Length: 216
Image (cartoon, rainbow, N blue to C red; front, side):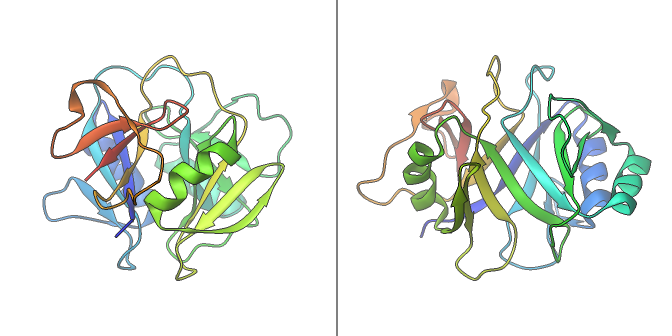
């Protein structure tokens, strides 16, 4: 069955970045310490892995947290810093975690576990939709000039927002989506191999716009 399992986050200091996000979201680590899980079963989780090199360029995938000024102050106390990625005057806060991974705090969003959305840059959301929808098993709940929004059929948990602008890509994304191995129904577009990881038990592929993702 198609499923969006979570987000893989590469880190130079895995334990420190995991601790930051655990505190930011209030999520608990898995038994082996490699993952963070929402208090609500079945939600996308976060898995942390050692980075192959330093972060270069803006990530094309980021997390959106729910909250206003108090939440911004709280995550800044944990080690987040404001960052300018050319967003201009927007009603949300754009921050970076201790390793420079961009994320947003959205004052008008709601989330029962802190995570409001997963945001994937896309130059052509209409072309990306038929690739990602069958792999996640999520449903379209909104769309517009800004892109398209998907959510789990239960109507709970974060949304997946696919839309412009797409940042130039000069290196592998430090954040990438992970989907189930059964998430490629017949007839849906295939991913392309991304380096030597393709064909391994946890294959790394790229979507039509070159974004790495994993299949577990």
